Image (cartoon, rainbow, N blue to C red):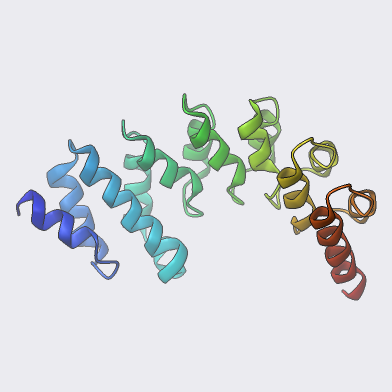
Length: 190
């Protein structure tokens, strides 16, 4: 298979995973192809067929892609819900802050890793604000963040406490206060 044909095939979301694997094996030294393999897997797992992500072949590819020099590939692995915990742990120490931030957003990242990421730089900490596994003590701190988008994600977080929501009702940013009000209403109805 030639390079252009491989690129064309990888753009097809319906390309069987064993064909994706074969292309990866042939062109694993090409960052462009590796990045496209990562995106093909990402789309398969998140948008089109979530069940397909449970495939052993996809998990194997995620593990291999986590070793890629291509930041975009590691980015796709960090956010993938089927990435194994040991790989999320490894990527939580990645040299690229966006990769670490996406580990912080991944709902399958364990609490002990999320706690470590809280002491990372701002972009990484901000990733914690929407993660339903972020411990309440961290959400409480993030609810007071200067960035309105962080506070908004805290207000929309499925695991946010009633106490945090009540504190956000008086937020100076109308969208944050409204999100807190809506979430509080949902919690009261449940």
